[in-house]
Image (tube, rainbow, N blue to C red):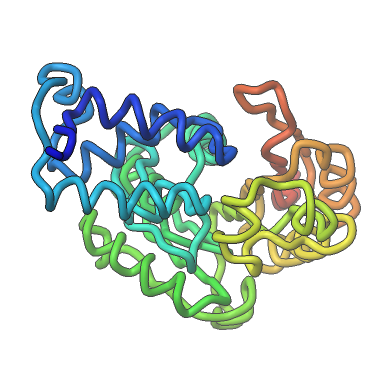
Length: 295
């Protein structure tokens, strides 16, 4: 009996329902992205030539990656990359996958530092893949930066991304906890942080398997209330930001009030909670007080 001829159209018609049965939230989109990757095509090409047959090798390769997706491995990890702020970044299990809502950190920095030519000094703690700091260096061409992270594996990816985008001369990447790797005298105009802020309970039972089983727990687990690391950031800001310097920190969708109080109690002023495109708390902002003016 002759084996069936698999085309782009028939394969997508099979794989999308198969993924849906296994709980994948966007089965059609994921199938298309993975098939385009296997065939070395753009996603739009799948629709331009839906009757293109697959070779035995292509079919085997697609079945291998679709099985990985059925096991709830994120598409970004299967592809090894993710787009953020119009740039492509390498990602892997040592880093969080950059998310669209995190772009609010970059948008907030641009709104508060309107002079793009300013020679800003930037510190990103919990730098991960380096996506945020690379986006900031892209937008502020005269800025320099330092990125820190506890994870040596994350820093390997961050260095690869920094080099890929041509920022290696403008950023130093250091391994360690928050601001601990920095020299005592190091100070900055802008601090950005995307700390672990998911509660342990949420991480153990409520978040999607793609997050719980594949992304690094070190970058996610914020303790019983999600604030274990968040509450340690304001003292870092006071130590490391120059007078008038700005802290921007990503937070959980229910953490705005608590995070704002932590910044205010820590001595920051102009504290503000910024809302993302889903109308959820996403970023807390605050300034180190400026120096008093002399009469």
